[in-house]
Structure formats: C-alpha cells, structure tokens
Image (cartoon, rainbow, N blue to C red; front, side, top):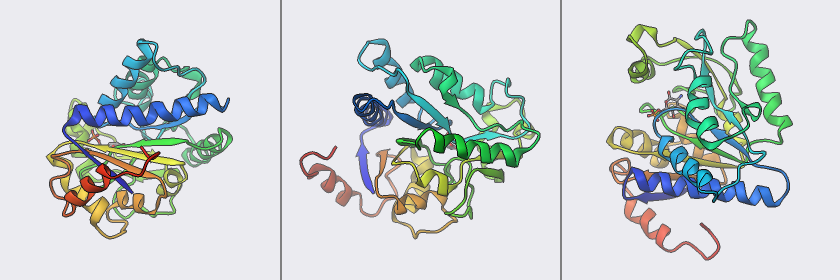
Length: 263
Ligand code: GLP
C-alpha cells in the first residue's frame, strides 16, 4: 500500500486528480479509453472539481472514458436528488462532461435486485474491468456500502446499512428516517479486481478508520482493510485523517524516497 500524507483537503484533491488524469492519459494512448470506478460521498468531491477544471481548461480529454459507481440505495426513486444515480450525474458526469451512456450506477429500483446485481457485475467485466477505483471510507471503515463483517470475497449484492451509516448520511435527507435501510453495493471482491485502488480521506472524523485500514489487522470488521490485499492501492490523506497512525513518520520517509519512475 502506498500512503501519501499531504497538508490538507485541497492537496488530497490535487494528488488524487493527478493520479486519475494519469490513468486517463495512459489509456487514451493505448486506444482503449479508461474505465473509472467512481464513489459518492463528500470525500471525492474536491477530486472531481479538480478534474472538471482540467477538462474545462482543455488539459484533459475524457472522450470515451466510462465510469462505474460503487453503490446505490434500494427503494429510492432514481430521480430523487440523493439517489446515487442523481449524485453521480451532478458531481461526476456533468462537470467532467462524460458521455451519460458510459456512466453506470447499480439499479436499486429493479424489481429483481439479484438479477440487477448480476447484470452489473457482467457490465463491468464486459467493459474490460475497472482501471482505477476511487474510494472514500466511512467512519466505521466501510468502502462502497460494504459494512463491517462484509466478506472479502463478496460481489455486488443487497446489503443492510449500518445504523451509523444511516445517521452519517441523514444530513442529505429531510429526516433521519428518510435514509433508506437497504442498498446495492459492489462487493469487496468486486472492488479488489480493479487494477488500481485510490482511497481519499480527509479530517479527524476518519482518523480511526484510516488507522484501522492501514495498520489494523486484515479483518472484515474494517472492510477497508481489504486494501491491504491489493497489489496497487494508494491512500491519500490529509494531516487530520493521518492523526491516529502510529508510523506516519515512516510513510512520509518512504514518500520522500520513492524510487525513480514511481509516482
Ligand atoms: C457513503 C458511501 C461511500 C463513502 C462513504 C463516506 O455512505 N456509500 O462510498 O465513501 O459513505 O462518505 P463521506 O465521503 O461523505 O464521508
């Protein structure tokens, strides 16, 4: 795992956007446009804003780029402003100017959710897999909506949201009870198949989850610890999110001594 501790949230966004832009450019040269995995939540918003600014300035060409979202609420009208379909359109598809036909979100409104989950897995495979999956982390260590005790082998499926996650996300709804109880999420096994993982976290509220993810045991009670299994995972955090790490001096030392050619 590569750990980059940077000054603040703005630096997290710059660092992450640079990595994503690098993948988009590299894939454009190979004639098969990039397949990005995108996340909702507040953590990646700064990254999307930096990418959108680069597209507007003509510094980044996203022609042909496709995207797969991690998760969606179950039982929420897809047109609801807080459905992840709407959130991804508002924060990713429109600002970056992606082709909406190439942006996919799991279908949480399907009559047959199990079939919809299997279809989503198939769609990712048919696209050639995800080149880079951008992730945030929940305060309880969840990634996507893989709540504590999710299997490391799990695939896209229906899950029950933890009470803490519902409380955390209540800020987006008119009342805490309006937060759906169920969701559809890519599994940890699905996420681990992305060729690169890039997790961003900012602020004190994430410090404990970040410490468990990086320095805690590989354990399904901290689903984000699954990143320890991935051969190309990068974690970009600000000083506040790094505040409970025991070995931050070591990570900063490694970051300063990166061998030539590695970013
Ligand atoms: C949400 C999403 C996750 C996100 C996490 C953290 O519920 N399903 O993909 O990473 O919780 O959210 P935030 O970035 O707003 O702290």
